Image (cartoon, rainbow over all chains, first blue to last red; front, side):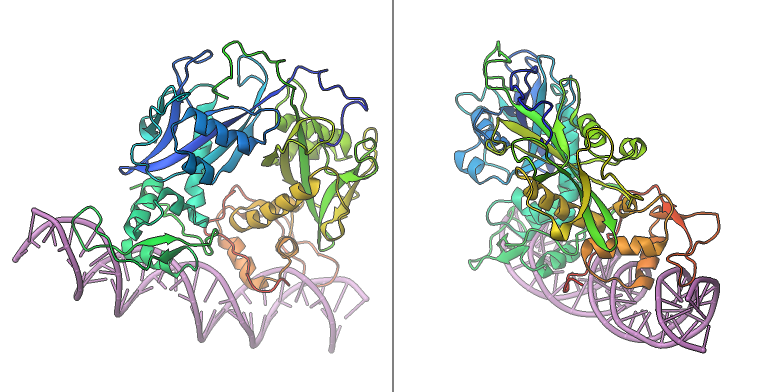
Length: 246
Length: 246
DNA sequence: CCAAAAGTGTTGACAATACACCCATGA
DNA sequence: TCATGGGTGTATTGTCAACACTTTTGG
């Protein structure tokens, strides 16, 4: 931004750029990683699935726009959207990525717990918003398939060296649920006792909830409940096995 | 980008956004981390130091624009700019970050070896480009101080789990030079024998150069020469000590 | 009683540290 | 011959993976 082409640079001299945001919002559901997609109602790519997102308004930052669009386009509860931890993935700026005009898009990722019956069919703008498993994701509009692939790579590696996995869990969760998050996202199997030790000995990763224990699916010993701790980084990291996936 | 406000969205309906790039280019010089800055020749912030960068042209991607601006504004050799490994840091989009108009900026980081007598005073556009040590960096224009701080955090952690440190070194380098990169960027002291083992036993981090050995500063045993290997990730990571800095 | 899931204990392989020591060179 | 930086060896320490085993629930 430092060197304007001309001293009296005219904002309208060039073909204008539009700036948009796109969101890759993930959740873990039934042993599979899901992403929140919407069905496009208009051209281009009418009828195709796409990542939620939209134009940044003149007085918004990209992050503000991301929250607004997420609330408008998907049926996610206001509280969820407001508290959401949004992380910039990267910005996509290839000249022809949108057939209409020059569009530069700032992509974000976010992780949410498995919501009771989420997003889908929210009122208003939410023409159609659905959680779809990554395995059977349809073709996506624009370059959204590439964005989604980048986002997936990012969150897989983020689980290694941050405490972000708790974002996939409800406010109170068992270590079994947390383990399932890792196994689902990494598509691997971890040793339960070792995982448990690693999580509990990392200061600030999780903290025990004073209240009583809870039963999981019914069977088995009731598990203790934990909350996400104050830590954000994971030092040393929790490395994923590099062997065969699952 | 999915949900245009109106079906027949008019590209000129809104106040246009300008899209720029900013570059945080680092090098290691004389035991200190340096960043490449330019002196602004025009308002706003005329006379202030700033990160190199500028407007993205209508048919450019952000990365293409970054290379072009870097070549134009600094005296960096064409070959260096062409081969440079550019990495997106993040995009800065606060509404008032530029007093002139709405400017969204895509920030990049890059690492280069200590060039003989670098950038400074290159011909043409390069009004004034200089390497300045991070310790005594002046106030920067716009929000560039924040961008620079973010970039510094990023490269410090990147050294832990990638092989990027070799980008600070010339094509052929000694392990002592590589060690100095880590010690400088992390502002810490590492155990030389252990560092050596770690680097050499990580497959693809560095590879020996068949030719003979070279003397370093004059004194001491001549060191063997190495090249950067094909690996990009560092598994397991090379963790920086968390103790007191240096 | 059995299956299933939570949770504890123990062991061995391996990796990282700390540090002693030798080598080759310039002055 | 001494200071300096390159390079090797080794003991200790700590961490992690593997796996046997106990505990507590539902059916």
